[in-house]
Length: 264
Image 1 (cartoon, rainbow, N blue to C red):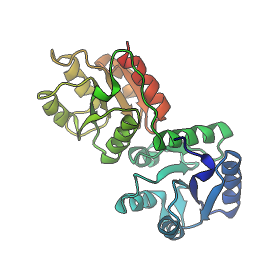
Image 2 (tube, rainbow, N blue to C red):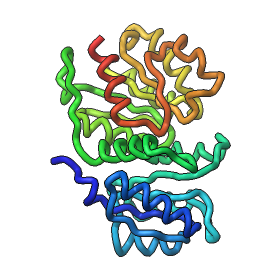
Image 3 (cartoon, rainbow, N blue to C red):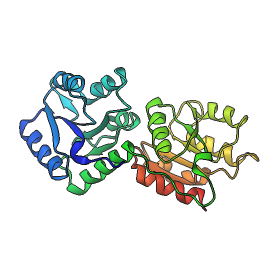
Image 4 (cartoon, helix red, strand yellow):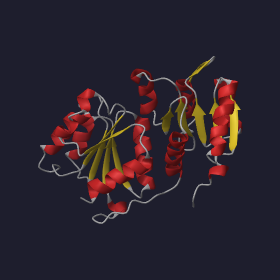
């Protein structure tokens, strides 16, 4: 069943009255008609309990805290399966945005954002809400065995959910490269999806291990990282990574990458 945009509930958390009105207009024009506004974290938390939104669209800074605390609240109350988070911010510093990317948010929109940027974020959210099965020539998608490697439990959760929406039924998770190697010593996989920045053994080192392993050397390897544009990642494919994409990622982009990797 397709998700009806006009039925989605949007909680807009923005301290500026003017900005709330402007963003609400943009949301309405994009087809999102059910919008409630909050100017503080306390108001947002109250609405999350009483109104139960599908999407939170939030600024970064408030008089009573930051969007980081709002995301923490979502996870503390185990709402991450039903509530999706978009950040709208003029913040460009990588270190400030890193935590949001690792938290599994749907999109980071700049201030101001274009209609096209908003539409892509909405599409990414809808893709998380409804199944969109991956069609492959060489595999039955329900038989695919996928190893997800990331030190962020939230990132692993989002990846697993997107894969399950595509029809993948067999996912195994590892918290870092070393744990992944231990699992690979015991099991075979059709696909490995890994982060780059991890303790002990990072994604590049894991890729080198995979390519040097007689048992796994031909296994497709996708890297999903919050810092895909870092200079040190420019040559990461030389370590054996088949494809590289950003956090947050669009499910449609991930689906297209997997089609190329698995049907080549």
